[in-house]
Image 1 (cartoon, one colour):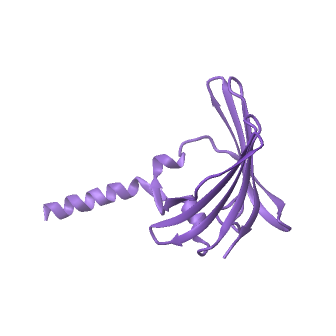
Image 2 (image 1 turned 90 degrees about the vertical axis):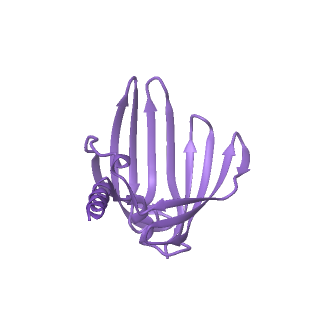
Length: 172
């Protein structure tokens, strides 16, 4: 009986350290074959990346995403082999970024692939040492994975500017 009680306490303690994975939730609303094509431009390194992420399988505990990446580096195209990424349904709370300053948020309609998408945006500023990182992310529930646009700029000791945007998507 003591072992059962200890096991119940352990399970209870572990479950309090986990939470629903928001990335899993953003893909779980869609069926297999749903996909997004996202272009990333890193101006500092003259790098352009196009990624195609496809929902391959969906279960109660995890989702399998296949990611195909094509890069354009200094005018040279590089195709990488497809990779499978597993998204668990739950994550540790410490991985969720709790305790940070509340970001600025709002709504904006963006036109992507001849569609008007109502997006929720979040803007943050993170200061670390002599560097500042400003980022703004636009998300939309109608898009598998949710990401529609992301802009990030680092200033200070390290300078970097990166933009990601949704090129197309198939929602099943």
